[in-house]
Length: 140
Length: 143
Image (cartoon, chains in turn green, blue):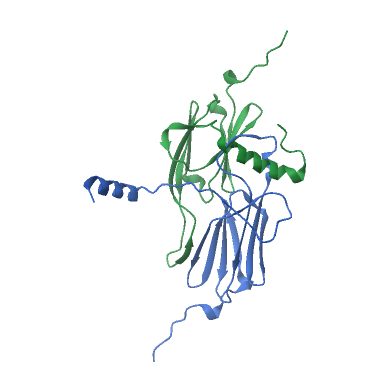
């Protein structure tokens, strides 16, 4: 599926595609951590998968990521800092602990998992396990 | 309140868990001429003796794509997302949408416009609006 056909369409198509995949049931909840935060988007790049999530304001040191088999667990705490003598006029940002585990429907190579955190976005590169890669079958 | 309900209430108050919210889409009076949907970033506004601070959550926005401007007493914030990093990636599952962020605030004359500063870190933009001298609280000595 070619998503980026024309620069002006590209963004809108991408956003429409994300809307379409809201109904996908590709991901299951993991055995531990039944929280819903942070929200995840999963992308496929070749045989590998990339999970992207938005956690603005969370410091790298307050983030914990674990991988076991096909399950990923992301936990931590988001804290807001208000100076002591401040009168708060509006509070829309949320804070608190989070603990979320998800189970992927594919086998990944745990040693090859890479995580990158920048500008409040956490990107997890999940390379597919060799044993789980699809094999091309020659048709005789 | 029954004993069970009381116990549950205490436990829930003690462990504060993060909640998930849908992004609020921006429905602007003027249409944008650039492609891509805009969302309204969540904001905290607080005030101290010296400053008024506006903290906005705009994950994914880099300094180069952030525009903060002041015109006619309106402070406008516009943060764009660089979609090029999503090239070659096909979505298979989505729980949130990705888009640019914009929000504007009307400023009162108590703000010293020359000294407004902005700081972007971990996707959080903090705008510090120092109060003009005449608006800062003053202690009056009693003779």
